[in-house]
Structures are given as C-alpha cells and as structure tokens.
Image (cartoon, rainbow, N blue to C red; front, side):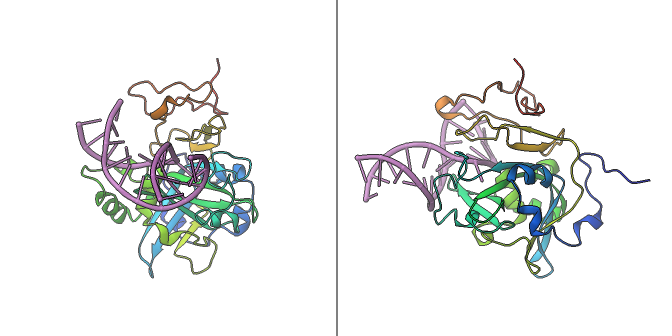
Length: 251
DNA sequence: CACCCGATGCAT
DNA sequence: TGCATCGGGTGC
C-alpha cells in the first residue's frame, strides 16, 4: 500500500533532508511551476549557516515577465529585477513598504524574467527559531499556523533578506534549498493578492483548506475595483471567497 | 530631483 | 480600517 499524504499534513522528518529539486524543475512556465511548488519544502540555514528553518509551501503566486503588467520585470530589466532575467532556480528578493522583504523563485528560461512569489507555508522544522524571528518584529504572540502566513512573514521566518537575493537554490553548497516534500493534491487558484494590474488573472495558487493560507482582502486605497466576480470576504470568513476552481465566481 | 505608491503586516 | 516607512521608477 502506498501511503498517501493528506492535504495540510506536515511532512515526515525525513522529508526535510535529501537532494534538492533540480534546475529543470524551475525552468518551466511559472504557471506550471507555481502549483507544483505547493507541498514542497524550502529550507534555509543549517549546520554551517546556523539553525535551519524549513517551510512547507502552501500558497504561491505566478508572475510572468514581459506579458504580465503586475510583474516587477514588466517594464524591463533594472538593477533590482536583474536576477529575474537570469537563470531559473535563483531567488529574487525585493523590499516593500519600507520594511518588508519578500522572496520569489525565478522560473522559465534566461531573459524571460518570470518568477513565483512564495506567499505562505507551514513551518516544519526550526519552529523555535522561526517564532523568535517573528517575535522580534511584533508585540503580540503569533500562532503556529500564522508563523509563515504572508510573503513577508515567510521571508522573515526563513531569515532571508537582501543577502539572499540571487542565491542559487540548485547549488550544492547553497544555504537555501528546495526539497521535494509531498506535492499537494488539492490545489485551488484565484486572483493574486494586492495587485492592481492584471487583477483578473487567477495566478495565485494555494492548498485547499490550509490554515496557513492568507485570507483574501481587497485593496484599501483608491478603491481598486475587485477582480471581476470576486466579492469582499464576509466578516468572520477566513478562507478566501474566490476559492473557486478557476478563480472566478459564477454570476 | 521631486513625487508617488507599492506583490504588507500590525494594531486599532 | 488606518498607518508605518523607504526605495524604486517615472515623470517633470
């Protein structure tokens, strides 16, 4: 009998070790890589680089380059986005709102400048270190499920910042690597969070029903029109209302 | 060179 | 629902 991992279950300890995924995994269309990233395990740090923290990915967003107005690479190569124009399998880190770092994995082929933003995950190793890193930036306590919920939180937990920009996930000696983990089976998609351009593209992917996934929240300022067919989440509702197969709601 | 505004998170 | 906080990128 083949053991079947149930959605949302943390992987075995053994899954936080072993060979990293090859570069060919990343050298594909971001729309294929993104859902395939769910359930995989990102590990940062380790014997040589300090305590390791591992996160099982539960929510990601695909960003294509030239044909995606929401991508940082849409307007061409700049110093900030240079990494995205390089080979797949490297990390693209960016700084937002004057205080947060977010991490992407570069996908596709050189020059394509596509990437996948890592938005949330479940901490499966190094929870103590992860919690300490979050606590250093908050006044109130954070639950286990919220430890790596949100792109900035995920990045903080892993201890990544400007120094990780350009890091190669596929290098043998890399301090950050992506392990196979257990690919998620129940994957849903919907509009990306917080983007105003191309807001209708359902390029956000998450593990269905996972408590670590970011709750949907429409943009506040300038009353951006919500993506077609997406209504504001009802009070008390935790899961995104746009959680419908192709990301669009009927009627 | 000034200005605008974010691929957000936190507290109210 | 408002606000912190700063650098990239655009436009003057």
